[in-house]
Image (cartoon, rainbow, N blue to C red; front, side, top):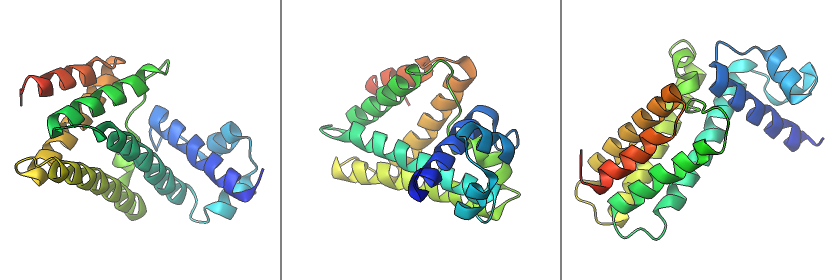
Length: 184
């Protein structure tokens, strides 16, 4: 396995495990075992250890979700249509797995208050998501684009938490319906 492949394997494995068990519920030994890699590979790519790996995993997963949401807005004629598509696309992604996992940012958020590196990664990803939604709102001439983006981000995050708690994509589909009906 090449160095870039090893790095991305560690990031993807950590992201998946953090989403499933939370940051505090996952140790480095488990990440390495799950990834099938020796201990030296972790410290070669992430000399800062678990916090540095978690920050990279948060940013990687955050970028993946941001790209999914951005694709959802392609071709949308209104912000609401794009928001509905984003809800449905996230729901479809969650429906592809046997067990719905937590949002990759939320999964490290608790540990972020004690770890500045994680706090920075969480804030960066959340800000990027809101900024991306605001760009779409401006592009689609939505009144008060920053407020609309912030409100949608909060609603999407809440729906994802509910989807995780209920182990169902229905909260995201319900949010899509509510947006379509002009509720909220």
